[in-house]
Structures are given as C-alpha cells and as structure tokens.
Length: 390
Image (tube, rainbow, N blue to C red; front, side):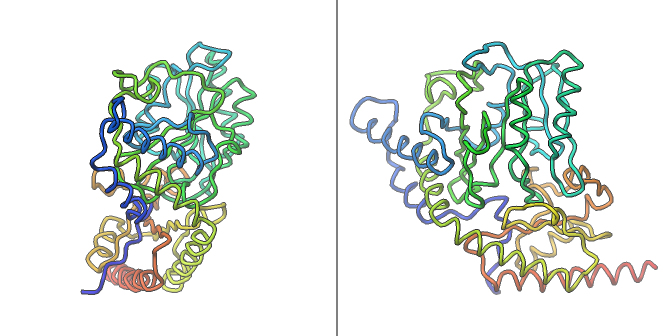
C-alpha cells in the first residue's frame, strides 16, 4: 500500500524534528523547582522554552504561563477573577463568538453571570458590530467589566478574525479580550502586541511540538489571575501549580522557534498547495461550497461542503483510501457530528456535509493529488446514490 497522505494538520501537526530532539534531551531532567544542580538544569530548559515561545509571539518571557494544553489555558483565562493594575473587581459578563472552540463555549467559568454570543457573517467573520451589539446587551444587564473571547483563526474554516479592531472597541467599553490563537502559530505572523489582546492561548502540538503543553500569554493590562484552576506549590508564579512537564515544554519551545524561522516560505508553500487542492476539488464538483473563501484565511486550511454528502461517511472513505482529513473540529473524542461553525455561518443544511483539509510545511503535491483522486471517488459514489434515489 502506498504511503498515507496526512491532511489534518489543524487537528495536530506532526512532531517537528527540532521538537523531538528537545524532548529526548529533556527526558532525564530533574524537578525544575529543586535548587540543586539537576533542578537548576531542568529550570534552565523550562526558561529557555519560555523565551522561545515568547519570542515567537512578540511577548516577554514573563508573560508566558505554561499549561497542559490549550483547553486548560482557555479555562484558566475565562474566569471573572481577572485583576488589572487599576481594577481588582471581577469581570461581570462574558461575550463569546458563535464559532469558538468547545473549550471556550463550554469551558468558561462565568456560571450564572450573563453570557452573550456574537454572531458571524456568511464568510465566517466576527464583525466588530456584532461584538458591539453583544456588549450593548451586557450593558443593558448592568455589566460594566466584560470579558470578550474571539479566536484569531477558526479551526474549521481557517477564517482570520479582526481581533485588533474588536480589541479597540472592547477596551473602550471597559472590557478585556481573550484570544484563542491556537491555529495561528506557525501559519501566520503572530504578534500579541499588534493584537492588543489581554489573554492569548497557545498550543504546542498544533505547531509541531509535543502534546501535553500549552501556554497562556498575559497581556500588560493583566496584573493577576485570582482564581487559578490548579492551586498548590506556586509554580508558574502562582498562576498554574504543579511540576512543569519539562520534556513537553522544551519541545514546545523548540517547535515554536522552528515554526517562526521557516514561516514566510512555509506559508507561501502551504497556500500554493491549498490552491492546488481547491482547484482539483472544484474541477470534480463545481457545485461544492468553499466556506470562508471571501475572507482572509490561514494559508493551510480548506473547508469544502457538498450538499447531500454525509461527512462521517466521507471521512471514513478518505481514510480507507489512505488520506487523513476531518469533518470540522477533531476535539470531540472521535465523534463526527454536524458542524456548529458551519451552521453559525448561515449554512445549517451543510453543517453535516463539510470536510476540512489542512496542510502543513511537509505536505507534498503527491498527497494533494491523492486526496483529489479520492474526492473523485466520493463524489462519484454520491452522484450514483442520488441518481438511484431520483
């Protein structure tokens, strides 16, 4: 059997060789909280990684809080107990966009406090006016210290959101901004200063690092997170207790550094591969819908919907023919379900008929062509079934 084609980089990126080397080198590291030589050596590995991750996103090392992954970082950020330099009062309301990851939509800690949703347009963009409307609804409920969570790039469509413009309006309204930037690192330039976000979530394994590491970037307005998820020994400056996972963190740092170093060339190459794939799919099924094509997108992501297609069946067909893709997010414990993102964009009839292809720097043209070949088989089978049903 020919080698498989892996076109699911948004689910997880293959481990980068630099990250693999860093992980192996750190496997025998000591406890980074110990003061002896072995502990100091481990601490040096953690702090080197902290500096590498910070440099990759335009932050300072002190702004980086390591976590077990992006889900934990999102939960850590989405709490009312956020103190700024001039206001220790808790946040009193939350705004989330309709296309956020489940770890944002269901992972926040606002309990009975008001939560509003900002809608997206048919291109998958969270418009500034939609956020302003959600803020106005919170204000009508007496909320004066909102937290707004808007992802930088959607994991299913790749659509890039106008975060800087949203942040400007939110700050003018007395609010703070959280950004899930998981899909951005290594795919587009990522500068937290330019975003003007207050809390930014990062993931290791989406950028070629090992699973089990993530980070929350604390912006300059944040002075303290008063309700950590994990309390204990005071690691990560009291924001996230527990002995740091030194090998995973070391790999995260190495992957972030490598991703940024190769970004311009990698982005151009991924964009070319996506274009090759999109053109091939449309030649076979001109009536397929390319979701988010009207908006700025990650260079590596292509979401295609085909009326009548059962996404779950199609994913299995691709897999059996040696091509790994997904239907929407890969964070549902192996389940393939209708995409709430596609439904939120105004295409509920296509929510169960959308496939996501995501490429990476190591993807080859041969992998793209193999996917196009399988697509032809899938579309032909669909046409045959529809013809028999007519």
